[in-house]
Length: 399
Ligand SMILES: [Zn+2]
Image 1 (cartoon, rainbow, N blue to C red):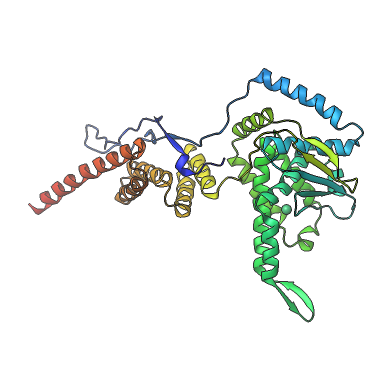
Image 2 (tube, helix red, strand yellow):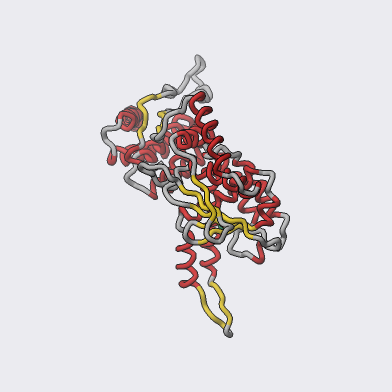
């Protein structure tokens, strides 16, 4: 999704019709418990999905035609290379990564199980890792997607810069300062997270990423020898959390759309006779993949919690998103909703004040939005109704 917040549309649909809370009084004059059935305000955030659903029959026919192409293209290649090509090809096309050639190779090294990517779009998979995951296409797709993600985030360049910045020498030996490892671990997690999106878009099961992790977990020395990698437990926790945020249906459909609208990638061997080179030879404009901007990601996650009535996490993430990009009106709008909801439950004026503060901020950046206007009016109404009541009460006491 290349769009930024300015393009995000808040649909005018107010799905959950808001019921203002009234202090319910029964005949005895005792206030009844606050109804738990207050509906939250729920405008739908349309993340401006840039694809249309592909017709099922048309898609099936396209896949059949592609399959015939694959047969021709992979003729004479080993089963290992065929598999590697087919998985990579699908990933590249589903994610619009066919704007450049990619190289991928299985390197013989039974001792080392890591996969790594080097500069210039070369993905290297060590044979021990490839062999161990050979019957698990989804886990292999995760490994490949992870390496591709490093390119998309320009991690190699950043690592090199960190290396120059944080290395030092003592007694003739080279050492790295702590930030080097910290940044590297952060990048590993970032690549894992993006890989889940990439593989899901290509139709693979993101939960199978855990199979790859399980395999790493069998190797107790890995964390010590590669301290730039986060602990496997941390990676597993991160993967599980990130999977819960994935919109699998949306990603699948987007991937299908991208595959349907692209052509089979050509396959040839590099001059070393081992490395596979995948190239899009079709003509026409090729678009470039850009990872979801961090602020957009925060809003998407916050909205996910909001939809699930998990207001604590939603508020936390909306606040983070607001700090990241103060010109986006969506986080303050939803923070106003959340505080209003809380106010209706507990009648705590602190929440009403916060609801007012946030909607004023939203209004500052989008005074035209129908939801913003409505929320502003709603909050002002509650606020003004509350004030005279307070004054009246005060006057009573004065008497
Ligand atoms: Zn990595």
